[in-house]
Amino acid sequence: MESLPDIIKSYKHDPASVYNTWFIGNEERLKAFRAIKRGVLQVIEDIKNEKFGNDFKGSSLEFVLNAITEQKQVFEGAAHPFYWKPKMRIPDIYENQNNKRAFGQFLENCYSATKEEQIIREIIKLDALKIKGLGPAVASILYFLHPTLMPPFNTAIVNGFNYLFRDNKKLGSWTEYLKMRDVILRSNEENKSQLSNDLGAIAGLLYEVGMRNIIIEGQVISEDEKTKLLKQYDKRHQEVLDEKHEEDLHTEMQFHLLKVGKALGYDPITASNDRSKCYGEINFSFISLGQFPTLSIDKETLSTIQLIDVIWFERGTNKVVCAFEVEKSTSIYSGILRLSDLAFSLPDHSSSLFIIIPDKREKDVLLQLSRPSIKKSQVLIKYILFSDLREHCDALCKFGDSHMILEKISKTIS
Figure 1 (spheres, rainbow, N blue to C red):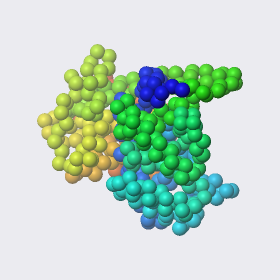
Figure 2 (cartoon, rainbow, N blue to C red):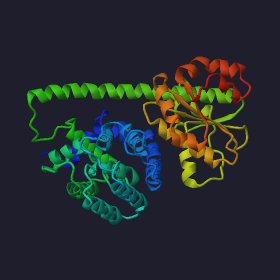
Figure 3 (cartoon, one colour):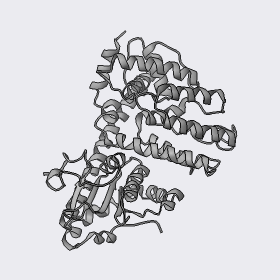
Figure 4 (cartoon, helix red, strand yellow):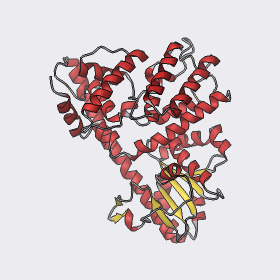
């Protein structure tokens, strides 16, 4: 059998693997952590205040799982175990108030935990309650709270684990999950120089083996499976091309926003990890501030705000005039949270906030901006379609004399 270091090498050298398309060089993955943590806090508050409801759909838990599943690949299907199945009454955290409260307390205690043993103790306590349908699928939430301690869990990861370690672990069992976790942590420690402290790297490897994107010695493949795998490879290749196209569109929209901001007389700046980008022959560093102006806000919130795609400052000051989040197939909700963080961090709440979205996602943004939790925050966020920004960019630069010109192409919920 191939050694684990050799399998890791194959995994890292495959340009279409989740290591290269999701784990490294993906700012959207990093941005998701903050949004998911904020979402988990909202779930806890809703359960505490008896506002959680009796269905997954429309709940704050749905927000969290949407943000997770929109990470794609490793987390595809992560929401399915949480869908309310009324005939089977599972997962039993919607109608049963005691179970709902226990789930909220579990999330709160795990969120606040600082040590590995605290999280494991909470898992054992939750498992002892035998809440129907509430199994280790929850570990995908725990991963985003504690990425160096808790690996995510799904069918493909279990299959990959069993192929790789010649085991027979089962889905649906917290006991099996904890045993798997011990092996994963030990293997990760032994190969950490090739992987990462973040368990997303080794989870991605297990996912790829489980999906048979990496074939290891001893795996028997039938002709039908070979045909299926060929289709799967074609799908992976297309997904990589689609992602590249989306990234190109994202860069184009950021460029238009920087260009318009500069033409209107503001100091525009792009996200801290995007300043090396270029569009056409123009480097962002030539039309963006090189350094983020000093803001008197806490370090964690500032690090989130610095990931906002484009911000316009009043020239020579630290006064935020406009902020823009450019969305692709990622979670609109996480972009809204970043803009909300900015709004609540500023003393006068007077900045104009915008989500820039592909035309085909207009319904999605209307749904998110209509959520009671967003309306209740009283943060006004408008949206601009990709096609409108592209078409009117030069006109905005030529005829605009302030950010108010954006009112001509922006929309909001009625």
